[in-house]
Image 1 (cartoon, rainbow, N blue to C red):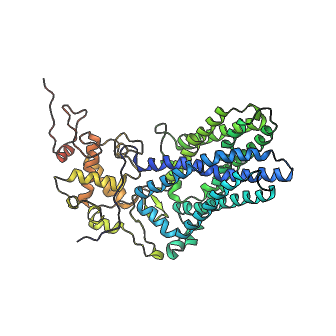
Image 2: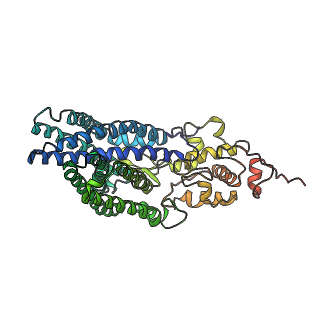
Image 3: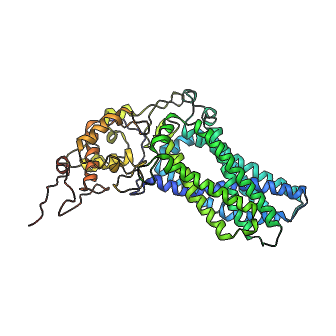
Length: 493
């Protein structure tokens, strides 16, 4: 009887993969949450001025923006928040379990502050003009403090996902060693500044809705624009600090392996040029708002929010997620849920040697009984299951999938021996810094290689089913044809 490891069933989404599902939901949520925290700071700045300079008209902008925020961030965000929890739980159950076990009290504290934040924004909006200004200002600052506290607590968890930054945590398992990691302060600064920019760009929608004849439009518009430009400049500077705190594997990915959006070209073109171009565009837009707030129109402001979401937050979040590879948590758990190193402080042991000795199909708990032992009859199905379990969290196993399609990355080869050589060589020895160490027994290597070769050959689909074809579109390698039991079919005269 083989020793079982705590692997959960794998959630596989054809074509786009689980990473894109999490990414799409997460990007929408990030825009909502970024706007919320940045808007809290903006509200405090504006209301402090309103009280200090006796300008109650400023409170009307805060009320309108606050009402918009209730829908934009606290309804939209509250829908996507559980969506993130669901998608990450089914896509990376061991990863989310590890974070909960490490940060259970930090997360509980964050939920307390989030509750105060939600109550605070409702109280802020609905008590404007109903209580004295100084008392209301205290409510606003309570909203600010709770919003920033949620940011600080979440960043401690997210930055630990990148890496602890030292060997100390592995030996102690301490939540403080995990939370105050090398990447924490830099990521907090970077995200905090970008939240100010997000709140400013969204806030221009409310500025554009103010009548042109109202002097409040220029007054508030210039304040919003200055806050957004400050966020852009601070974000650019803190990003350089952030890069300096990245682990070695992230620097390799940053240099060579970020996803190509426009074909096989340099990463600076595929990632930083779009981000830099978006930052410049948003900067010019905010400068325009500062100089000519009377000219801003609601459709233009809405369009800039869409650009921020699609061309700013999406590539930024995608890049940040890619930089962690091959790890998903603390550089001890791989993206495919296999524990890849010992953590003595928590009694966690490296699972790679066990899998290398007994096989993933024999040690994973939820593998169907009929696939635990590979036979000629189930080899293709076993190969597909191995591809899903070992690779699908980071790769599409379709040839044309958008998420780093694994068959395509093998250069379309149909040579089973060549693919197995890669599996038995660099991948098994962990010599590829951005890939998990996947050390499988020879029979599992061959099953996985046979399946991937067959996908490239077009003899099976990504579900592992044979594809009937009267005339093969391309020559099928003999080893693949034999593996799937196919016979070459000649065209009729």
